[in-house]
Figure 1: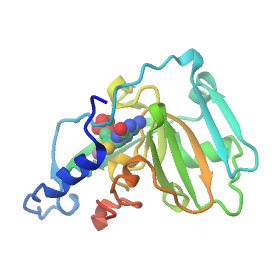
Figure 2: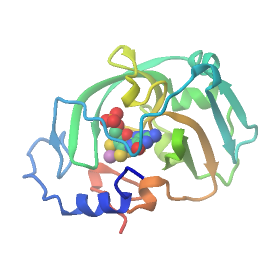
Figure 3: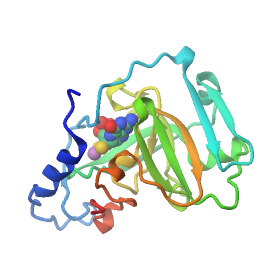
Length: 210
Ligand SMILES: Nc1nc2c(c(=O)[nH]1)N[C@H]1C(S)=C(S)[C@@H](COP(=O)(O)O)O[C@H]1N2
Ligand SMILES: [Mo]
């Protein structure tokens, strides 16, 4: 494996000293603001073929659904602008995304979580996963985004599709997403298994779980 062991990466990150907190209420504790848009992920950038791409909704839903790319892209589009916060301590103001809002996604596809469902797992290319609570997703600014800054997502930022969960650290905004699994109870995704926090709320500084 040419990639650093994820456990080592988490240990390294825990040793990074915190920069002085800013007075700006817009910046969560321990974050600094950047104008750049760093690219961060574990493993290589996947090669995605839209002709063979699909998106699966499965697990504890009344009716599982599989969408192809035209089907997904035909969902209603909304644009929004939000600040993003990465656990590696950079924050970026006013990032603009377009895609389908989580609530529109559920409504238009008539996706009904079973009563026991409390969390989802996002599933991505190369088995990247991350877990999010349904009550966190049930918000007006969570979405599956296919566009950044008015243009298709750059490949390295998740083309053709990524999740956007602006109220959580950015590792929950899964790039190259291919499906969502509804679950009874919480289960750790990739970084959560390697020491990141299960919730990851930047306003509570929930960086590490252990
Ligand atoms: N599929 C996938 N999505 C991922 C990751 C990854 O390794 N694989 N890394 C996460 C992490 S740790 C971060 S900080 C953000 C970075 O997104 P960016 O490269 O667009 O800045 O993507 C998240 N989504
Ligand atoms: Mo990250």
